[in-house]
Image 1 (spheres, rainbow, N blue to C red):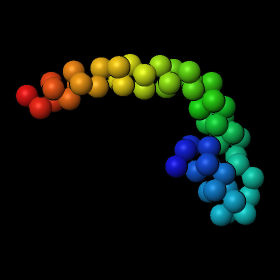
Image 2 (image 1 turned 90 degrees about the vertical axis):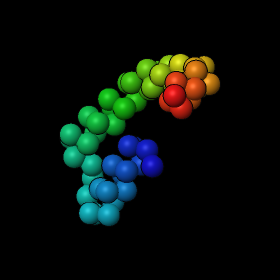
Image 3 (image 1 turned 120 degrees about the vertical axis):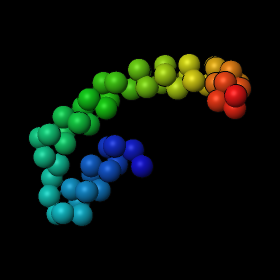
Length: 56
């Protein structure tokens, strides 16, 4: 479950709007999306090498 979905579901379950700190968490999550995609791409590009090193 994504951070955004989790924040919204938690607030909804408690019958409230997201708190200012939860809104900031969502904003930060959105701002760092490009970085997470680059990290995922790097891991995918080196998948075989990482697995081989992990097996040893």
